View 1 (tube, rainbow, N blue to C red):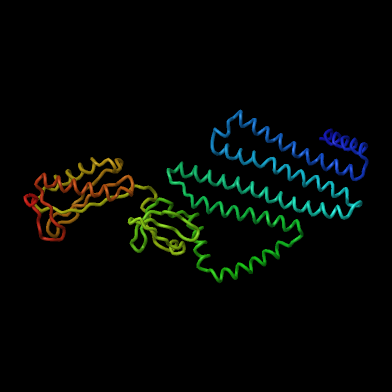
View 2 (view 1 turned 180 degrees about the horizontal axis):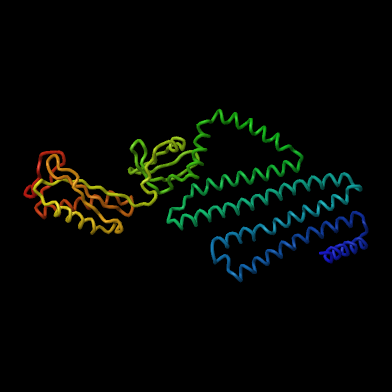
Length: 373
C-alpha cells in the first residue's frame, strides 16, 4: 500500500514539474482523475462481459442474468459521474485562492453532479431490490405450487421505492445544509391534516398492508364472505380487494371491511375440499348394499383424492325413510360442483338399476323405479 501511495505521489510530482502548480496543473490533474474513473468503469464492464461469456450468466438463470444486466448498464454511468464529482472537488480546492468566480461556478456544478450521483445510485438500488423481491416471491410461489401474486409484488416494490427515494432525498437535503428534522416536522403536520381528511382511505391502505403480510388469502383462492357471497380472489390492492364471483362479476371490497370480516377460505391450507351428498331410501332397503353402491361410485371418480377414502353413513331413521350422507374429498375446490353433480347422477342411476326407490327427504312421497318408465 505504501509503495502504491509513493507511486501516485511520484506521478503527481512529475505533473507538477511539467505544468507547475498553477491552474493548468489543477486542470490536468482533474482531467486525469476523471478519465481514470471512466477507464476503471470500462475495465469493470469488460471483466463482467468476460465472466458472462465464460459462465453464460444471461443463459443460466434469471437471477444471475438480470443482476448482471443491471450491473453492466449501471457501472459506466456511475463511474463517469463519480469521476466528475471527485475531479471537480480537486479542481475546486485548487481554485480556492485564485479565482473566486470560477470556484463558485464549479461549486454549483459540483452540487448538481452530487445530486445526479445520489439519484443514479438510488435508481440502481431500487432496480436491484425490486428484482430481488420479485425473484424471492416467485421462488416462494413456485416452491409452494402457488400462483405468483403480481399485486403483492407491486405493493412491496412501491414500499421499497418510497423508502429508498426518501433516504436519497434526506442525503441531498443534508448536503445542502437543510435540517431533516424540520422537514419531517412539516411532513408530520401535513400528514395529520391529510389523515383527518382521508381517514377511511388511510384505514383501507393500512388494512391492505396487514392483509398482504398476514396473507389470510392469496390471488386465486376461493373465499366465502359473511354475506354468503362466494368467489375467487382476482386482485389484492392497497385500498381494496377484488373478488370474481360465479357470475363473472367483480365484487370490490374495501380492505378495512375485509380485515374485520369472518372469511372462509376454501383453498387454505390446501385446495382439496369435502363433498357432501344427502339422499334417502325406503326403510326396507338393505343398508350395506346402498353403502357399497355409493362407495364404489365415489372410488371411480378420478378427480377425488385417493389418500382419503370416501365414506357413507346412515344419518337418520326418522321421517319417510333411511337418510344417508356420503362424504368424499375433491382434489380442488374448483371442481366441487362438477364432481358432486356427477356422483349424484351416478347414485341416482345405480339405485334405480338395483330397484332401490329414492325417497324425497322430509316428505312421505316415494318415487318407485317403475315411475321412471
